[in-house]
Length: 261
Length: 153
Image (cartoon, rainbow over all chains, first blue to last red; front, side):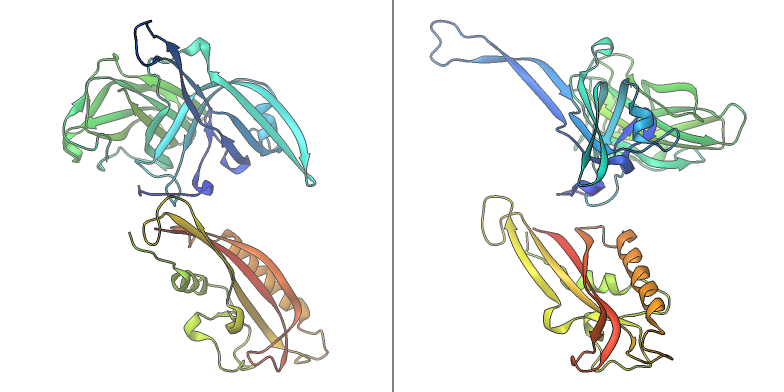
């Protein structure tokens, strides 16, 4: 994890367990917008407003028309679906632990194929956060707990500072997982988790209540959002990923966490 | 913050790219003369190594305060082999083309320079005949332009 500015080529787009980065030219605007309800009385000197519901949208994905089996953008987008989208933004390098992530569950509302300069392009646009899966947290911005890499063992490394200071929060949070592939074992199953700690050392980390996938099959792409046990669950300062390799040797996945405020 | 433009570091990183059979010269290694026994050789073109330099301010402030970025081109010349050094004028031409393709492939796929800059192949403005460092002896070769974008501050 670095700090500072970055450029667009270090952005990645993961959706429903597929890495769409290689087909994506641009995505956005990654919108987090609050309407306001007017709440002004006659005697108020200044006209005011109250924040209302947030609108969260991934905007439009401009990509490359491609029919590669299983993963090509045309293959995966031609049937409109609900996307679990995770968009980590690497800071002058490919996304690493602690980098910002925009994530959410969005209904694909449009698929267009067009020509530009001779190349055939594909465009997907997304609705606001899927109404049938309303989030408990009106915040799409979290941090990357684990970059898109294969793991073959439990995590004994330290995590990242998700709070920027001592203490904890009691606003719960949610994680998004993107499972890309797995090998070894018979059932290819594993349990992917978020752990938290007050001290950034291996022995201090413990499972964060509720933030686990449960045992899932990892050999087929999958993605999802898992909330903490309650919206009041205490989340300690440091965050890291963890995995229980139930019946699998290697799992390739990415994991992000958003702390409830 | 301090203003820092990393042209030298970028050129060093470029010259560290390993391409079999090619001598990739850093700015401190520009050959005084192009020795026919040392080619193929890719080196910065001394009289226009940097071109199209554009400074763009990205935030308020001035001097060393403002966030900014710069765009510029780095110009390289490949001297592959002296003209007519083979059995005929174009004896080495196919292998020269292959070498240019190798260099372009290497530059395109390299992420060596991924820290603070974006480096892309911008073009091949000269192809076929180039001249040695003194613009005197003709060589089979090409000139390759690499565009660089860097953050400043």
